[in-house]
Image 1 (cartoon, rainbow, N blue to C red):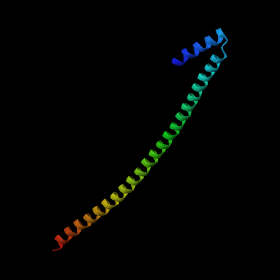
Image 2 (cartoon, rainbow, N blue to C red; image 1 turned 135 degrees about the vertical axis):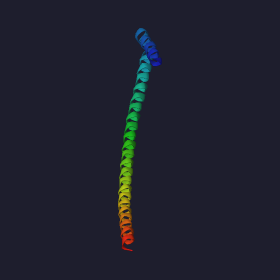
Image 3 (tube, one colour; image 1 turned 90 degrees about the vertical axis):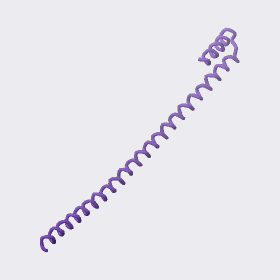
Image 4 (cartoon, helix red, strand yellow; image 1 turned 30 degrees about the vertical axis):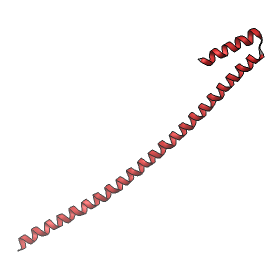
Amino acid sequence: MGYSFIIEDYLKEAVLNKDIEAIKKVAMIIGENTEKTEMLLREKEDIRGDIKVILTEIKNLNENMNRRFEDMNKRFDMMFKFMSLGFGIITILITVFKFVR
């Protein structure tokens, strides 16, 4: 809002008094604001790009962790099956040897 009042005053001065310097000041203020706006828009796009890269990295890390946990789960499942099978065999052997004696 502050710039709009300044620009309005300079434009009034430029039109009423035909002041070239006032026109130059208006053009300078508008140009500076345009440059700042363009710079902010570029920074905003850069930040969005960085955020997309970060989100992609987080997604990749999550997928890698899930794969590792799945591999661990497979190992524990295999170990549990072998242990269950081993205990089952031991139980059967103990039962058989009790009846054989």
